[in-house]
Image: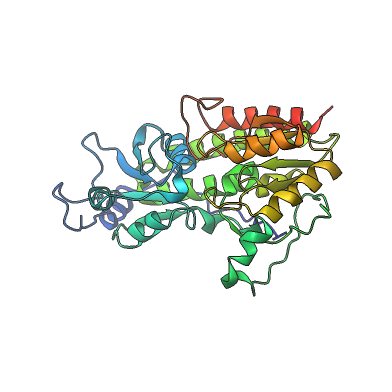
Length: 343
């Protein structure tokens, strides 16, 4: 798989002169592009940096790194499946009022378009801080001809299982937050960007970034240890959200749908999953909290398999197995250990 970038982002020094701080804040002054709330870039009424996040994983980073110095809003409401989000004209107009936008390109086309037209100066794009890989099903690949000539070097830090099923290619995968190591790279980039947008509080952003990266490093270590010894390395999911996680920990994901959870699997794909489940001793078919579970449950019934929840963490709801990213990821680890027969 693609070589993961491990370059360190420049560290932001907490030592700032008043003159440099004033100059940097001057750069933040933005035109509100027709909004009626004054000039964007001046922060909220309480002086907090106004940050707009595209969906939950970006919201989590902004809140944890920004702390008390930011006011974070998200474009994707809890319980809304983010892939097909549409923005109203009012929501699009409000986007221009942000001091900073944190988003992930390629997941939400409507959001990508609105951000490109927003005129906001400080735009933080998550995939720019790490490497993207091609995951998904053969059907993803067939419908993604524009990527057919991409030449990717698929080396990886962790050895990954040779699945033997011929599904090492597919659509370019945006689900980088489900790999704690890649997510930590994004966290570093977000921290640096917040410090550049608000240099007076750079030391706090740097400290919060380091603390979050330490937590993500611990999470990575827990996954590595928890999935080291299993009876099978293959799991079946509703849609192909867990390719990075599978690569990181030497597992093999077989998805019913592709990168888009709304895509419908073909009859040939369902027959193929029957064969995979039998050959690889699969015990569980995973469904999600925000996408329909009908096909997953039907497949599990046909195969006589268990069902379980593996949460792609695209949003937190009352049905989530935790209150935040770290808690839900640990619930995912427990679900995988059970399904894969971890010792």
